[in-house]
Length: 88
Image (cartoon, rainbow, N blue to C red; front, side, top):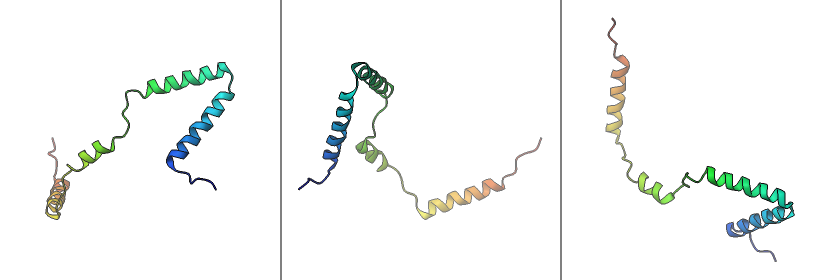
């Protein structure tokens, strides 16, 4: 009986596959892979990963608009579109 594939199992199998492939490489090629990984890590070192808690905190502070608010904006847009610029 096989175990169901979970995210944890999938991660393990993926990492295991990578390790098996890595170990089949020659030492020179392994060094190239290591150098490439170091390069990729340094390239993305300053970038933050997506933070769901921070995003939820920010999104809950977004205001909501009523139909009255939207109508006022649409009315302003109509007037803006009718506005004629002064000619020189």
